[in-house]
Amino acid sequence: MHLANLARECAVHVFEPIRRNAKLIDASAAHNYLEKVAVNNCAVGDSVGSVEFTVSEDSAFSSMVGTNRVPVSGRISVPILTSDAYLNENRFELIRVLKFDLEGAEAQVIEGAKALLQDKKRRPRLILIELYESNMIPFASSTESVVDALLSWGYTLHKVVNRNGATAPYEYDLEDNLYNFVFLSTD
Image (cartoon, rainbow, N blue to C red; front, side, top):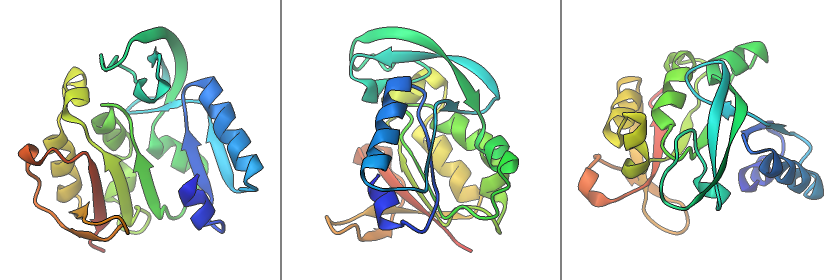
């Protein structure tokens, strides 16, 4: 919501698989007069169809695979789509910012957005992503694999260096225990 408020002239597309959370996001957008926020009640990944989604007692830890960080309250079946399919269906010409926090499914979302991320005309100039190694293990992926993919597609890795949001180039090091990464397009 903060980004939507800062860039009111831009459309913001939100993907939230938990219906209650999607409704809360939609209500928050309406309450804050954010007219260009589109809330999609679905998951995003590397396939189109449906997927079983693990809902944790604290929904911030929910994912397609349980994170084992907090107790699970249930499982639901939700629609899933790829970013590439969504963007093609809605005929987006340019994505400025891509932000995601997926509790481990980041590699799958990157795979489902591969066409976009390799398209130098349409791809986002800024990607904000949380990568937590322990959550990625159940997905048979790693922080390093996501970082390597984005670097190979022409992004540079940065880290936030102060509370004002300033960034500086960064060489990935698993030992640093950083979770929030900034990728900038080199185009």
